[in-house]
Amino acid sequence: MSTVVLIGAQWGDEGKGKVTDFLARRADMVVRYQGGSNAGHTVVVNDKIYKLHLIPSGILYSDKMCLIGNGVVIDPGVLLEELDVLESQGVSTANLRISPRAHVIFPYHKRIDMAEEERKGKSKIGTTCRGIGPAYMDKATRVGIRMVELIDREELAEKLRDVVEFKNQLLTGVYGSSDQFDYREILELYSGYGERLKKYVANVSILVNEAIDGGKKVLFEGAQGTLLDIDHGTYPYVTSSSPIAASACLGAGLGPTKINTVVGVAKAYITRVGEGPFPTELHDKLGEQIRERGHEFGTTTGRPRRCGWYDAVIARYAARINGLSYLAVTKLDVLTGLETLKICTGYRYKGEIITEFPDSLKVLARCEPVYREFPGWQEDISNVNDYSELPQNARDYLKYLEDLSGVPVAIVGVGPGRTQTLVLHDIF
Ligand code: GDP
Ligand code: IMO
Ligand code: MG
Image (cartoon, rainbow, N blue to C red):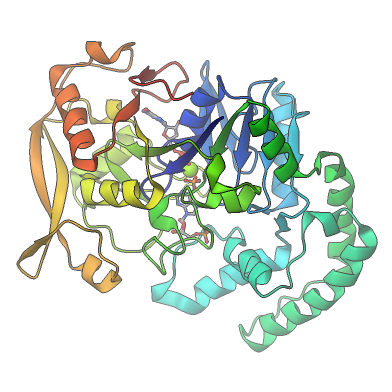
């Protein structure tokens, strides 16, 4: 049995797409299990850049099955565009399968996402406005529409009529908006989507379980990150799904006894998009410098990402919540040239040092990071092929990061390209 769950160990955008693509080389199947088109996973192969939102990052290999599980919320317009772009780039999408139980995002979800952000004003979450929260809300309140209904025009027509009427009332009555959705228009558009997507719909739970039982290697690709988890993240500044490792079982339809290994992807520093407290955030020129060098602008929304020093309190927390077996540390190359590097080892709160990630957002917002400093390195590391070729200071930095989180580093990223990856431990 060989199953690996790969998750973001920070606030998302850790480089999960790149590491998934790298590990997918040895996998037979890659599975997305939560989130939706709020995700933006970048894969760079031979200088060609692929930006994936819904399709698993294993799609660039023609022989891997790529599955979208029941836990994902699917915007069919975005998915079809992604399929078209990949096909036009010569990438076959024949191996894609989508769970009939995955919920569908409709135009009213995106409009309500925006309206809710406007209503919150200063306390907005800074969502991607992709309709994620409202779609998961409909799922929980049991008025959601799933892929199985999308591909059945009669079912779609029946469910949609009720829901659209209610959403229109919500938009005018609660949000004071004059925007109204036309049920017939949505029905025509979405039944067309259903026709095109029908051929991909298949029982993901059966496919995953059969693959595992048949000795195949299955890789689960998380979206977002641990601190954006609705239960374990910095609530309410989180997404509406569970990006943590446990969610792979729920979102793809398999039992926890079938998971062997969990890999947490973390940048050698840390970033965040959207609102919410961020103890090691750099508000100065250095923060800007890291943003420029690391091209820290959102893959989905283009928003500048907030940048800060590596936070080992968060790393330890992610190790516990996800049961991490290994860390994949990305973007080490971005730190090249900095004189001094810092790692946050704990927080100072009301004169005391705390080393556990706080539950209260009020406490977190008042935490001051305690740092340990390290000398940087000046050598270009983007062409290094082996860990042993890294400058001593870079190895010391990684070693300390490993010791603090208590999790071995298995992979190190020294550039965005598929080949700019150092392997310290084989994962599959
Ligand atoms: P994801 O959402 O976790 O898949 O991450 P994103 O794709 O949103 O953002 C990560 C960005 O960093 C992308 O532009 C990647 O191409 C890039 N990247 C990933 N790993 C590395 C690395 O080791 N070094 C550098 N310089 N860039 C990397
Ligand atoms: P990947 O998979 C980084 C953030 C948003 C916002 C919060 C809620 O590329 O790592 P949502 O639209 O989900 O309701 O927004 O979550 N967010 C992400 N940040 N990477 C992502 O995905 C994200 N997906 C959502 O910026 O703060
Ligand atoms: Mg991303």
